[in-house]
Image (cartoon, rainbow, N blue to C red):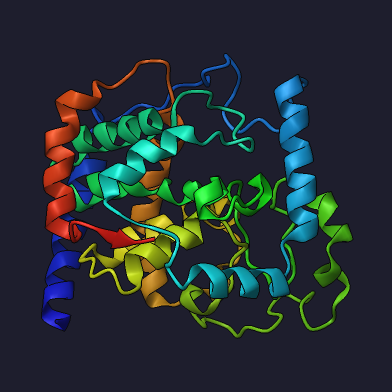
Amino acid sequence: MFEEVSAFQKKSENNLTMASEHDEVFLAPEMNAFGRQFRDYDAESERQKSVEEFYRVQHINQTVDFVKKMRAEYGKLDKMVMSIWECCELLNEVVDESDPDLDEPQIQHLLQSAEAIRKDYPNEDWLHLTALIHDLGKVITLPQFGGLPQWATVGDTFPVGCAFDESNVHHKYFSENPDFHNQAYNTKYGIYTEGCGLNNVMMSWGHDDYMYLVVAKENGSTLPSAGQFIIRYHSFYPLHTAGKYTHLMNAEDKENLKWLHVFNKYDLYSKSKVHVDVEKVKPYYMSLIRKYFPENLRW
């Protein structure tokens, strides 16, 4: 098993290097679908006001106790049994109130990201599939999955159980979080240790962690470690964009972070008004689903 993982890492690193040496790869646009800069949380608009209110509520309520409760409840994987593609279609019922850049159907964002990566990294089929499924956990906001509020489903993620780094968007609202004043949780390391590994760190609860549980727990997925890492931490902007919380990472985290940096560009900047023909590309992604997942999964 170790030899298989090492071979995968070596092959992936070679492909990662080759892609970085070419200038023809995906070029990020300067403006989002609303004609503004991406992830601009300060621009004056009604949407931005609602996004800030979202983060106010999120920052107040995401505590260690809440995360433990959610991981215990959703870790049972007893909400539904269905296929990956069925979940993709179900996701169209979800609206992400935390996203200042997107007002398109969710499946379009997934396919836009996946198709852009597929073009630049044609040999990394696991990465194409990861892009397709990375946001499927957002279904937890639907009634049949418990109807969690938006603040417990979407938005940037961050560790709980240690100090809230100032790189977190709208950081000021953490002052109303009970853990902010708890001496066990409000230091740099909190309940963790240097290099403990992100797998041992509790993250704020949302679609990232839920989808990670679906992929990594009991469903028999063969998606590589780097793909699982992307799913779990793609909303962890304080890490992959601001470079914070690295003191908690171990060696495997640092290797996987390289692929998360690749993925993030496509996740963020592929949001556009240009729609992907779902039926045209569906057969390719169905083949990847069959390769890496069983027909039906517990959710």
